[in-house]
Image (cartoon, rainbow, N blue to C red; front, side):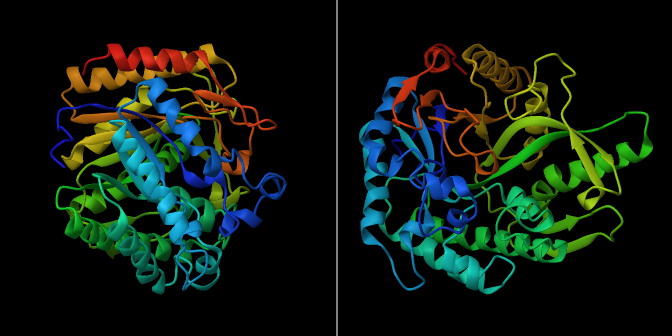
Amino acid sequence: MDKYTEDKFLWGVATSAFQLEGSPHADWSSWDTILSEKPEITNHYELYRKDLLLLNDLGVNAYRFSLEWSRIQPHERTWDETAIAHYVEIIETLVKSGITPMLTLHHFTNPLWFAKKYPWHEDASVDIFLAYVKKIVAVVKDVQYWITFNEPYVLIIAGYFEGCIPPATCSTQLGVKALVNILKAHAAAYDIIHAACPNAKVSVAHNMAALAPWSKWNPLDNLLARFARHFYNQSLIDAFATGQLRLKLPFKEQMRFSVPIKGKLDFFGVNYYTRIHMRFNPFKKMGVEMRHLDIDGHGLTDMGWEIYPRGLQKMLKFASTLNVPLIITENGIATKDSHTKIQFIKRHIDLVEHCKIKHGLDIRGYFYWSLIDNYEWLNGLDARFGLYKVNFETLERTPTSAATYYSYIIKNRKF
């Protein structure tokens, strides 16, 4: 593993398997009518060789991608060796091209059998997931960077608190239990990976958002924003530092759980996209109303998110308290306008450079989301994050001017 130099800044792009290739065995496949109409999405599972060549065109030296667990284990006692060989071939292709793979084990989706029988709020889910981890670690070689879970808080809030994605339980109690089990699974997966690869670098990818009061003069809005910042951004960081997960939700007593994750972090993956303004509203779900405001004049994305580059600096400073290297594992914009996409990339990378050089933060990489347009969960196929545009009728991939610009950045920014 010494061939991966510590001083090499990782310039990459990020994707997830399900968002490019779908899976008939995943819990999400029956969730959205778009997936029944276009189950193969971009057909990346068949066109992956063509897509991997785009990485060479960009000039990236790293690629973050995920395995689709439901393809690898379509049934509880069945391992699909052909699917495993498929993902192993992707890794081998990357390594041969001099591109560092960053492998994500869990990116929101679960096998349908797992979702029905062992959902994350059931304690048995941990051992079931770890059997999958052991299977992958036994066959995967030449991977140094691992992400165990992508955005666990998004999964818990959307899947349990709000109930708008699988498993749609609408239960805070079960959601908190699921979060604790996911963190336990991370801790054990960390040990499994390191036992097989002592030089591995293992993390989670934590979605962080700049959270602000709707009205600065309103004490309730300010209080809610403080609660939200601690819960959404800070509590996971504190748990990695102390081994104690402390959660404080409005109108509830603080919850505290011992989780065995202290020190089980070799870097910290930061996903950052936007700022959200919030206020207390008893008529909204969980008593919270959220909106996006274009305060700094950078505009809103096609998904209505505020473009707020300064928030990335705030999140990196938050995360730096862990005293481990930081990698921006996702940062991107949904827009059909390439000029807007270029400006987004420039402003955020300028701040990465500022944080690294001026403030001395130990930032080791930046991954743009995403390589090509993809299925964006509840937003379907309209959220155009890709550096390469996908025609969802012909599946043709076309480079945007933002791809050319990102290639220029990679060649000319020397951190």
